[in-house]
Amino acid sequence: MTRVAVMVIHGLGMQKEDYADTLISRLHKEFDQVMVWPGAAKQVLDIEPVYWADVFEEREEALFQQLVSSQGLNYQVLRRFVIHYLADAVAYQPVEHQGHNYDAVHRTLNRAMHALAQRNGPEAPLCIIAHSLGAVIASNFFYDLQYPSSRIPSIVDVTSALERGDTLTNFYSFGTTLPLWSLRYHDFSRPIQVPSPLAGQYFPGLEGEWVNFYDRDDILGYPLRPIDPAYEAAVKEDMEINSGGLIGSWNPLSHGGYFSNGTMNRRIAQGLARTWTWVNRDLY
Image 1: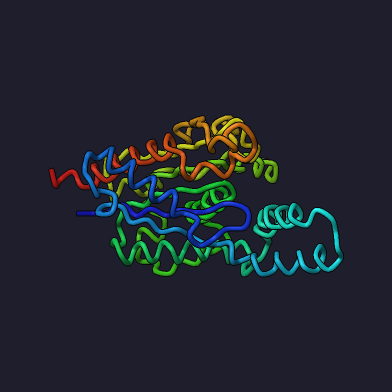
Image 2: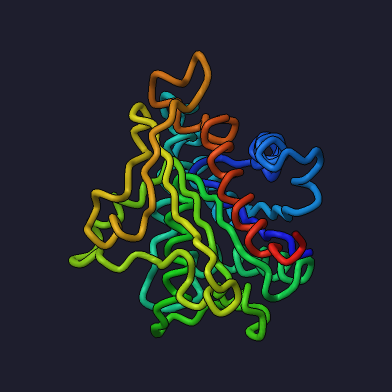
């Protein structure tokens, strides 16, 4: 039996290492229901959360102490929030040479994919679940793998198809700021391919998907298909959901409510179930 390797990537702001626990718990519940198989998720999904916040955390906190705390500026709680949110996006910007923050963040993905390949084999199907800036990071990461340039990805084991990104089958983005990044480029018409261009060699006939979730009250989350005709073709669906509970579902706080959203997790579970069933169709 082949398991589905799932990589979760967090977004902006102050994150804890257990940030994905809520999503994993809800996704397991929805997956078991979709499969009509109690305990299915624990048996056939291997979920690896990526924690990249520590790449910037120490320097962001030092910046807060130097500029805000020591100077006695007002609204310190709000300023800490702004520094940790905006600094992530600014610090992640790619620069001309390698060895900077962009590459340091991407190495956390490389390590996660290596761990998944070690546990599930080098040809296991790979699915990505990414929030906010995490979806931008995932897009850039797989773009560098699919469209080789002078920037060399830090693949741990180059003999592993999974680590090369060749087994990418599903991409689920939510609350993403990716459309805003289109302003950095004159031509933003080369989205990543999902499934990857080489996925057919490993899973002939498998129909993967890129599904994007957004909440109309989330000022940091946007649909992707209107960006460009190429994105309209690449993204299977922009799915509007109502993210957040009673306090956050009707305002910008909805940006933090996706992880526990039943509609989103149900849709992701359905996609993962289709992928696992297809890859393991010889078992039936």
